[in-house]
Image 1: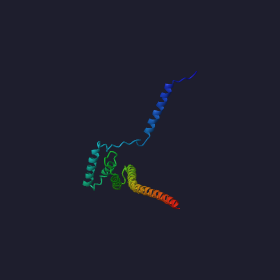
Image 2: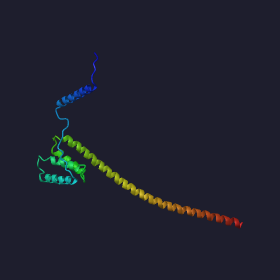
Image 3: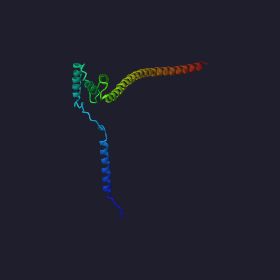
Image 4: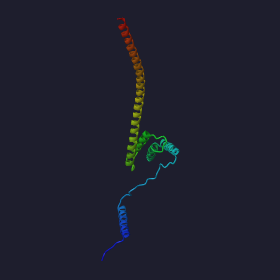
Amino acid sequence: MIYSRNFRTGRFLYILALLSMTLMTNACMKKPMFVCHPNYFDVGEKEGIGKEIIRLEKDIDQHPENSGKYEPYFHLALLYAHYTNPTPDYPRALSMFEKFLVLDPDSLKKDEVLYMKALVQEVVETDKERMRMANKAAKHKQNNKILRDRNAKLIVENQKLQDAIEKLKLLELMLENKRLNLK
């Protein structure tokens, strides 16, 4: 007897086996694969970021000794470095991350904070390098302008000297002609 199997039935069994393996693997995990934190920084408009920064700064200023208030430093750092912030302050974000790590070194978010701090540090260093390069480019432009002005002056002076040389050659020819005529 010849055994024949329908192609759709085989594909269905294959998908069913993959699905069951996925479910079994997921059931064996100690922690969920993806942890979703609430999106604290869904502040909506750009003005919302500024208002939230002011609110958190006041909260920190009013209760600086409050030992349970480490979160505002973390949130402030994220807001200062937020991509929709119209005036990002990366050095301030870096200092807020550092304060958070100093005040709460055993935080559950320590790895996350260290990672973000490293990213912001890279942004700060890159910005410093960009500013250094911009200053260097401005100096080069200024030097280039000075050299162009000097070049233009030298071209004019060179033209005057060439004109003088031509006049001297003509004068020499005229004197040579007069000398030959006198003989």
